[in-house]
Image (cartoon, rainbow, N blue to C red; front, side, top):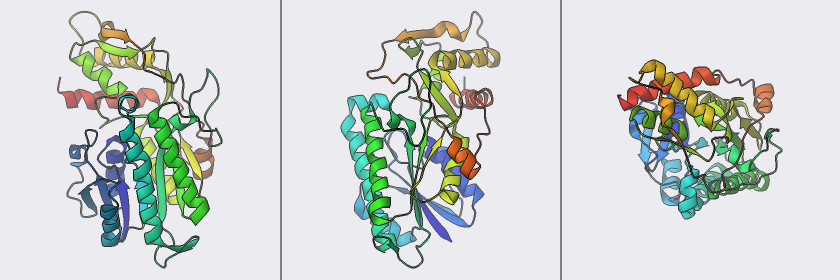
Length: 337
């Protein structure tokens, strides 16, 4: 049975991915390595916690001894690396944690994989010829866009926050292991994910939670900042496709083609909640309030996903209207209002 290591599998995207893969590939064994920081939650994985092809290990990707022991014990043949510190606000106040996890952690995983899978540069050991390292990154490494244009795989890197700088650094380390050692690597850069199991600190869960609890709904600046929103399950299917069929050394951008500004997001959620649980008076929109903008807040992100669409046949199944309805309904049940 082929064994694949998934890092960060108790987080938002990771838990959705693990659940999807464990159910889709019963003949593959998935090892989930997660430190269970504030952003990781094993409740996200209750549906598959007893699956025979799934194993959870609590641990830090920076712990080289632990990572080496996992590779040796389970004969890891593939890595899907999602573990990362990812909240921009936190990177502004505590950038050192982001450098440690996102840069050193990625290096540790890569280097252990290289030494376990390969005899020397460009020479794989027998039984590991098809081993692959997939690194999940973000569109934030490209910086910010004006009112027009899209990020492509050729867009120069221009990260603007400690978070995006740490992810850009990790991308470059992955790239170097392909070019220097001939390691089988692929990188995905995704747009903003949304959907079930996202941490409460993120925009969409925050709007839903604050609205239902009768609190002020905080929106940065004037709410005009634009993101390309990607439903998390669509992203997971894209990751799987790149892992299975992507070309060695290539980068694939995964985006939802759903550009919306923060004002629209907040108002749309409030409209849906008005229908699900109407207030006695007024609308949830009345709770929207504008707060001081985030330092270095990028204006717009948007991804050109034509490479993964044309070369690998990926398509997003959800548009924003269908995805946000599923998301609001999921959080409504979670918060039990």
